[in-house]
Image (spheres, rainbow, N blue to C red):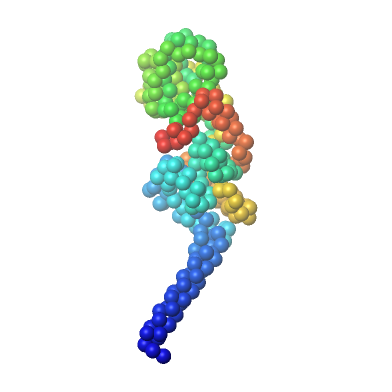
Amino acid sequence: MPMKNILKSNRLSSTFITLAMLLLLSGCLGSDRLGEKGNPIKLLFTPATDAEVLGGDAPTFIKFLEQETGLYFKSGIPGSYISMLDMFAANKADIAMMNAFAYLIAHRRYGVEAKFKAIRYGQSYYRGQIIANHKSGVKKVQDLNGKRFAFTDPTSTTGHMFPLKLIKDHNITLATEIFAKKHDVVVSMVYRGEVDAGATYYFPPSPEGKIRDARIRVLEQLPDVAQRVKIVTITEKIPNDPLVFRKGLPRQVIIKFKNALFRFLSEKGGKHIFNSLYGVEGWSEATDQDYDGLREMVKKIDLNQELMLPKL
């Protein structure tokens, strides 16, 4: 055979071999089922999670999940909720812990489903509150007309969104309104009379009668805060942060994860880890309908979710 033909034949053979290897490799790479070592289940923690805490406690939880389910998991912390949503869009996220506001967008865009919600102080929900200085004359919501008011942050459900809905429901016109950013700052401003009233988070008193709402944050500096800053009203229930699953995640994976999660929380060490990892005592089952009240609030105050998302 002429040398030219031999070279041509060798090049063709090499090309076919290369193509065959690529096809073989792609077949191998794509053959791993979800939960196998080459295709672990991707679990995302909320962007607010401390990376150092995650590095210390998350591996223990992941190892437990793998032992209990027989599946492989990989955890991570997105840099923001926008990044988290992008990961769901690209099928790079299977399970995630996120705040309720981001969940509304994730569900609408990508069909992400809430299956569990966090438990804090024994409750699967929380509330906001409107507080007032004891000399302000504000005893009920209607008394807020013409008063100076402080919210926390525009993205806060307890320190802005739900209290604002209450104010709008009662057709209140405030004299002035400011955003003080932090809950303790709002309490301090109300205490000092810099504003007449404000909005913060609410939790009911402990069984011993100790306050657990935002006023507790300044109790050490202002021992008489409970006497000088009074609760005017509390908002409707707001479901706690959800634990969500991507659309199409196999039911068997969800069941195995659920069983392992609750088994982990039944152990003292597991409860401690989740408390330090995510500030929760446990999880209760949830459905998407649990977040309808939040959706109604968004409509009521005409909130643009897309513009708010980068600030979460």
